[in-house]
Length: 176
Image 1 (cartoon, one colour):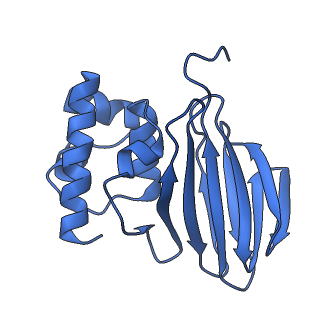
Image 2 (cartoon, one colour):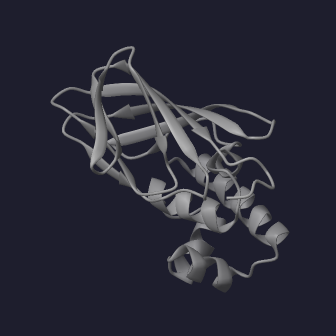
């Protein structure tokens, strides 16, 4: 991430943390990261992984898109990159992402907030997606919808894959 993107993420992260009434120590402990790392992120330093950003969004009780909405560049590393395309404002909230995965990549994603589901449509390449024990191998034009409130995975074959990832959050106030 470039310095401008890190600074933008840091300022936004800090404002969401303060709005939620959490101290730096509380959020760091709940997200399972070191307080010093969270402090550095809020100061626009460091190099957060997608998992770290996801954990922070979950602990702040905001959709991932709310945390990354001010950022217009892809997030991630050389193997997996995501970029927010659009963010719905209705209930349930629906966020759309562009996702790119390098060949021979296995991404194990942590469970998202209760009631969250994902629908992924492969644009190019091949991608195995879903919850362990119930994944689907998709090719261009194929989609798979699955519960994302449990650990799930994305795995490429020997070629790069691109996809549209749609995350559907539980409706506000829903009984789960």
